[in-house]
Amino acid sequence: MAPSKSQDREAREARERLKRYNARQTVHATQLKRRKRDNWLAVAGVVLVAALAATVQVVYFTTGPGMPTPAPSASASAGAQQNVGDVPSPEAAEGRDWTGTLALNDDVKLDITLDGAAAPQGVASFIQDIESGYYVGKTCHRLVDQKGSAQLLQCGSLDGKGGSDPGYSFGPVENAAANDLYVKGTIALARQKDNGYSQGHQFFITFGDSTFPSDSAGGYTVIGTVTGGLSGIAKNIASGGVVNEDSGNTAPKIPVTITAATIK
Image (cartoon, rainbow, N blue to C red; front, top):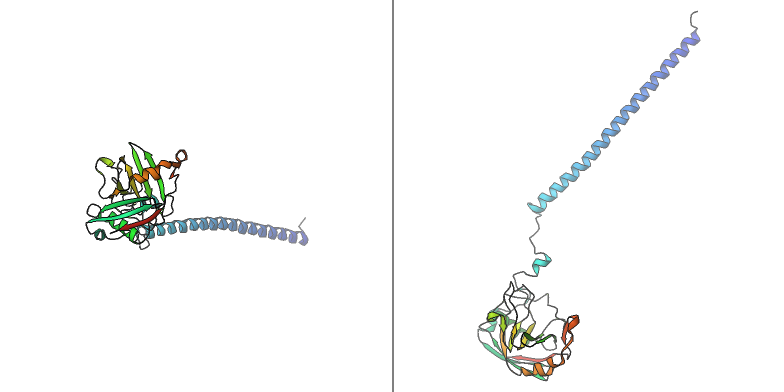
């Protein structure tokens, strides 16, 4: 029996539906492929841009105009070989001897002589500190009384506790003691270990022969001597001992203040 017109129409419609379905599937598959390709391209683009940016930065900051000025690290700056602050010219020491006085608590009066020829930079700095009035009112924060080894009184710190002045330091070491022996009555400049340019306001006076080993920066700058009144340190200051040597606090138990300083 020949198919009816109705059956032919249904068959055509079925074929059309199948064709449209296949077309949609093809479009969908194409879109998935395109989306995957676009995603990969986007990721690759991001990676490429990041790589280019990193390369540009490396070139700019290492060989290009943005190369940073070389600067010492924090640890290296501690040993920087340069003066800091208003450090006077060594010529201010005039290459001669200077005489003066230091008074501690008013009851210890020291006569001093500074050697401007042997330690011109250190003496110039010490003179400047006396003439500017820096020392008056400053304390002596450290006492060592080990007879036969080291006996010293250290003074002049900015904070009264041994802190250095970050705005003032100089070097190098001058006129260090021979054989590391700082004889009784020596006036020398304190400094940080291994840093010859960390000298500043702080100084120490030995009230007994003392040995201080040299380090990589050398010894300690000897600027002069105490020519009178030295026994007063032992009698009126060291006799009281230190606050608490076991805890590391070697401040003299008898508080010490510089009450007067003169130089000429």
